[in-house]
Image (cartoon, rainbow, N blue to C red; front, side, top):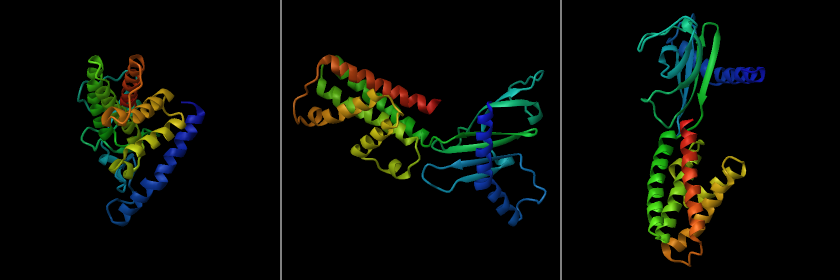
Length: 252
């Protein structure tokens, strides 16, 4: 880790201590739930997508799956316990499958005399995955219609696929109001702003906007569809990439 990374991590670590963990320890001590000699070995802050107050876990309350690097000369079999004195470092920490898949988290663990902090502030990953799965279904229908040259059906389904993929990406940013209710125009406007910041490929935004403009013609026959077969195939290709991009953002 570079020096700048170390300073940034130390600052972030201190912020979580000051904002969440130390106040929670103080409350528990006042309530008689912790001894004055309490020794902090780890903490976890769970952030909820619906805006509910974060949950703070201390020491043995932490629930997480960690990919660890063992010290030289130490080997383990599956299900063997691992002590902190046997660990050289942590590669990745994520929440267990029993947790709400839409939560974000920050997990702090002390290994011997050093602290390691891992976090994932992507919210609504479970809900976003459902949107991606459904987007793929609409895309498959669009591709099937394209093969049969049913262009109206193709474009209508392709718009739905693009909108669902766009919403999946936007759901990763915490906003309870957007999670609860998002209109067609709201999704499009937000995705365009997201693209303006350089967060997605310009061709994804262009495809989504073009399909939005074509939807009324394709579904409600409000005008002719003046696109070549080649242009429709380009839209198909870009929406497929939008879905893949959304999927990668969740899985990384």
